[in-house]
Length: 124
Image (cartoon, rainbow, N blue to C red; front, side):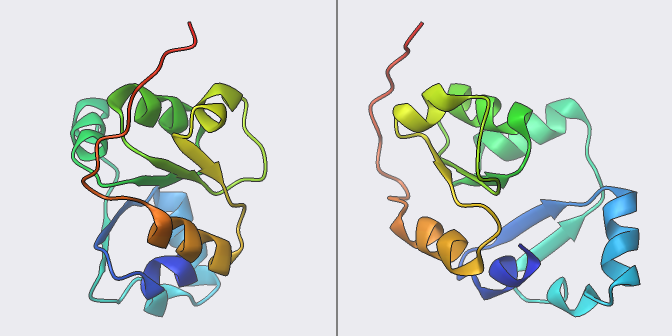
């Protein structure tokens, strides 16, 4: 994931949980965060996170909650897992499952149509 972030042409805002930051340091991956396009920030509150999500070109996440929020906010989502509990987000074209494969992540980001309004259908 960090390798993919560091290879992207887009700015990546990455709110990092303290335990995650600790593991990044433990595995000596800090250099992947020291990239011109990666903005590693401290965790933010819920309302600030919603603001980040709403203003994002896309959301890359492994969080089920963020997948659904991206859907409701009409922001394309790339899920860094192989499955999702929110299958409707995939079926409606708002979410793409890519797992942890760097090339699949980069391909998914490259294939997003940033700034293009995608029609929003609600299955409910």
